[in-house]
Length: 481
Image (cartoon, rainbow, N blue to C red):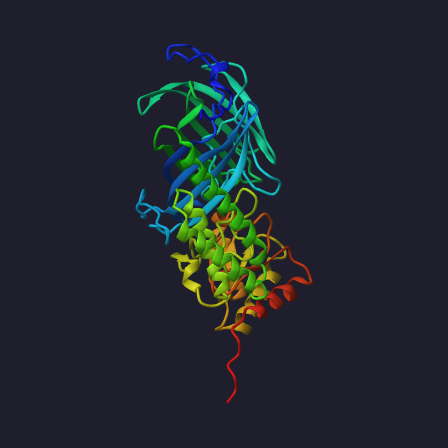
């Protein structure tokens, strides 16, 4: 049976010669078609003395579940693995070959111009910090009419500036002549730089084959810089290519793939409400675990098996009474330092010792992080409170000062005058990853490094809020003999 083709090729010209100077870039997606991409994601932070670098292998695939002349429905799967994990190893019914940091499967709609949408509540925005948990940058919203070198068009994005796409020229990718598209998006204050707010820029480059509208290569660079700075303090680079020519599966194989996609989504939807209270939902979790195990044992594994295994790992953790592993937070919709998630590790200079220190150094006991502006009139009172907390709860609690300033002389003078007994680090580079939109900001981490509470601003009630939150995460007192 010939699959229904999205934007039926017979309606279009029977092919677009490589030599022509204008192109119709609309996607041609057909039922049972699959696109498979592989590549890497690397991010590096070097602002305010903070230094870290992380990298992942990225595997993204899209299976077209259905298509007509108006839109296509596709399952998009994104798997992130540590960079050292070996790619391409087969997935077995009992588990995956390499550990995954994130697995996300969503069903999306793609309209006739390549615009991607999903059900309400499903975030699709590209993160401005951290790896993409759902990568769909190989689908580009393009004009309905032909374009040529130099053509431009805007693409609106909710909550963000308009993205401007430009046809930059043509280049071959793996022997295929492609049209090179460049999409640029930047916040207010990127060009020219502003002194009162941080700024970011995102540049996407996509190489599309004009005869099919298929992306053969994708590159995305996201940069961020601090206020009044010319150089970037954060840079992330995502690169991936089409791993194989687009495939159209025979009916039986496609139906097996489609069935596993729907099973994985069904298992995830069933598990979601049970995770809030696993102790009370133990019978339902046991039943769900049985259904997942039956599927893994009796159904032939497909490339979408990883999504089923991801749900299984979360369900098994909940059955053991453990907190299920949380998915990577999506910085496109929230800050990286989310309540209930591990605080991101960092390397920052200590103003007193002039040496660098890691947050990981204080793991094993609660931490109170105090972000402050050393020139604010409320800072002395804030730091005296932090000094009191440090004295009252030592050695069970660590207080950590984070000065949001490069004025080392002023910070060191304050440390000496107030006789601060706790470390004070340069916190400028943590503005984005810890969502420090205003100072002061106090955060409480538990002994595992998980964010448990945050208070922004300083008032008469602030000390009480912080202390009460801290008490909840102190070690239990030893029983008296």
